[in-house]
Image (cartoon, rainbow, N blue to C red; front, side, top):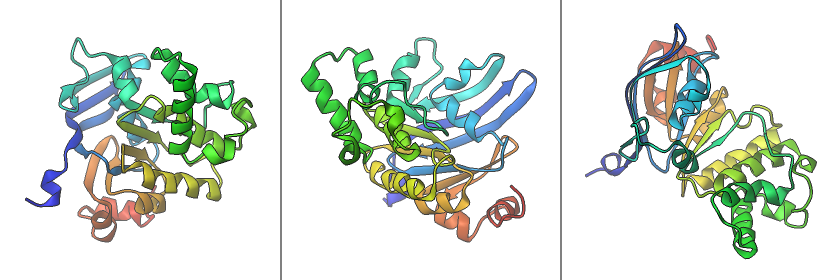
Length: 257
């Protein structure tokens, strides 16, 4: 049995369609997302990338007039079944947004927020969770003497890593990232990319990116979206060196985008 066959899927999406009102945003999406790998979602603006990852933790349902058809299974469980618990799903599937969005609280309280909601009150336990989350986000050494300071005192890149630490604090299995470096400078971007390499040892990561080079640097597999459809999904190396579809080739080579 080769390595490909032994990799488990963390998500299995079958014939999934989504509409905002009368506008179809996702068309017949079928994809199996492997665990503990980085999957990049690429494609031009408005092609359905962000909509797709927001379906994976059911955040898309916060938008009025959304209609969906098809199935999404997370760890073999249907995420839309009638007794599915959305809060439990969002605990296991963390999300990091395009712009850093720390809470207007201390660095410590940002990371402790999720665990407190889940009932952890013991100070020693919270201290350990906060330290573990900040270490996981490669931020501990920079902030360990500033934990009571407001999160807004951090630089943009540090704020984004704090948001990653906040996601890690509730011990998710999957981390969704919606263009997490698009608002950051090159140095902060490099730190986040290094962090993603480390995190994939323990987490499955799905990242939307406009940056072709970034997808090539950090991902194991890439899905190319166009007009709400998946045009191609393959190992990043194969897709970049020998794409099967001319539209993929045109997009990667910069003919449109």
